[in-house]
Image 1 (cartoon, rainbow, N blue to C red):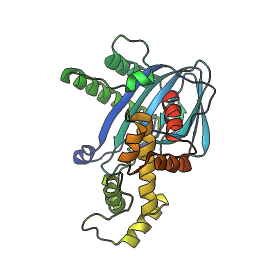
Image 2 (cartoon, rainbow, N blue to C red):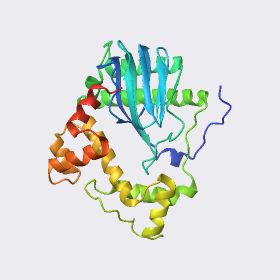
Image 3 (cartoon, one colour):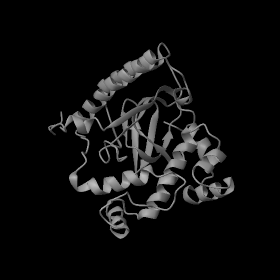
Image 4 (spheres, one colour):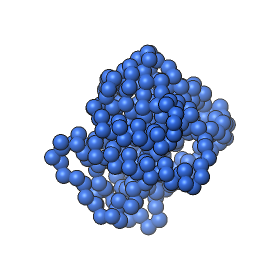
Length: 289
């Protein structure tokens, strides 16, 4: 049991936290014994019910054996599945208004979590009814719901999320609150994130109290990159996510990101990732965890 005190914040602060579940699935992995491309993943957890999973992220490799769970941070990673691997997985977003994750640095580890697994099976039953298995493709496919069905799913996710938070607390992982010292950089990042994705030249928020040079220094201190590099990374992250999760064509995604020609988008994306958008889409969908 963790001796770390639970984080306490005013209700007005907690109300600004934005959480949404993206998928709940249970089933075999589609491709084994092949390392995936480096793909963006949201926050989440998966349980290895059969087989074994290996994760490469943050410059290290993590082995997740049968019976353990992997608690994932929202970032880029690669993964490898042993033959016959079977997962129970929940993916979601949970962010402050400035786009930072509730857990920024405390995740990306494997651990036993039997109580959370029970809670996840209950969530799976609410989302998917009597089904025993649901693939990632099925879990992320477009669906329609009545208001009663949707609110029941949202309520079930809220109960599960409380169990997820309690599990992390017992393990010793606590969320990081936003601090007053980060208010200015949070304001800047929130503004930059709100700009259209086809805008590549950075601007500062109206009435921002510092100039472009100091803003550049703030980003360098916080993220190690300048304003233009931040905008480029933002567009690349959006491209990675949309290619894997969006049902739009690659040409539509290219135009939405500000490319006048799909060929320019392909060359730009290959330069940054080493793969074409079509190759990345196939790898991301077939190897999602």
